[in-house]
Image 1 (cartoon, rainbow, N blue to C red):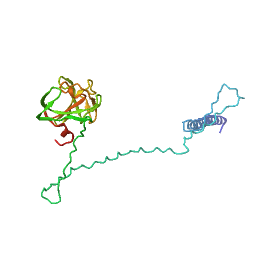
Image 2: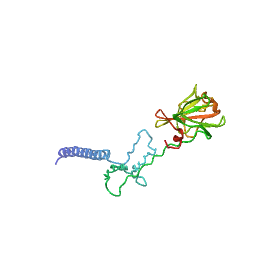
Image 3: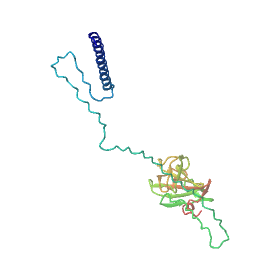
Image 4: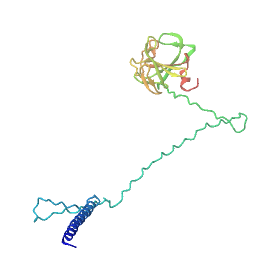
Length: 259
């Protein structure tokens, strides 16, 4: 080959080598860039070191410490939440119905069965005054009145006692009236129920009870006096009379339950 051909061949191979070297550099740069992208795609957990180009070359690069992963918070002992307790109300006890006792027929003719008589205790009756009876009850026949000097009936009994001696209620009852009678003087009338009414006359001027007052047997109602105009000749005494359903009865029989 002559010199001209040698120079052309050297020129061709020389330019070809240059392009091969350039292509190798480009491939190397691509490979390096590819791996750099893989390192910076966000999947790497290694901290990224930042280099400031403005820092002088003799400065020491600073690397950030790796962050510790967060640890879950675990309690020493588990917390147990108790379940709500539902208390059922106790059933109310139903009261057993009370049945009425069966009526047992009573055969009046059956032997061994006899109704016992019920004793009714009469109310207590007491003498209104302890003393001497100087005039008795007399409505069926006339008796002589020493004060008026004539013969007339007498609807009660006269009991002689010292003036001021206490006079008491003969039986429990309600005071009907307290009055000044023009013939019998100061008088107290008591209703005992069952139609019985007692009258206490010839008392001193100020009795101890008022109309409408409840009294018991033996309750003081006044004191012996001599206020009766028709019996003034007897001196201090009590005129005691009793009526049943408005009709005069013997006070002596009323006191001993024999009327």
